[in-house]
Image (cartoon, rainbow, N blue to C red; front, top):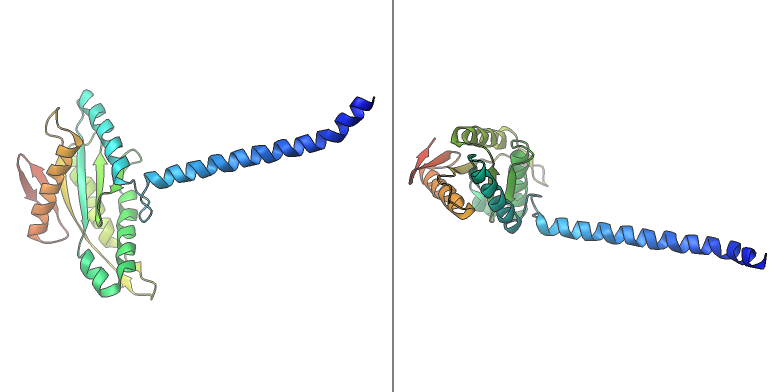
Length: 209
């Protein structure tokens, strides 16, 4: 009887201790998940970080090659980013990049990959998408970026545009770096022609549209 009374006295304490341990374990798991997510995504845009994107993209490209499926990439540059920063401040440049990232997210599929590639460049990988389909996506992004404005902290409304390079996997042995180099070559060609346009890499050349 005495043992049962002692157990009854200690049981609430033990249950409370177990509840605290479980709560601490759940908090630690959430913290680890938050830290992992932070390392995988860009803090400003919420898109993938470059390193994580390259890992996922290489895996996706290998899968597409085994399935004989076309894969396309878009390299997207925010037009006049330096001028925006100079005239309105770097916060305006950040808001412009967030605006572009939002337009991209709204224009691609759930399984497409989008990442912040450099300062004002964003890269998008389009699995199972040949060049004509990728051009449709690129045009959708270009139009969506221009279709709406965003507000600066002082209330000024800005609109921006983007210029893009598009490339599609050319061979079964090409890796993600080859695909992105081709997209970058197309982007440079497009930028030489001006802003707010798309260039498509085709057999060692780029066609601006």
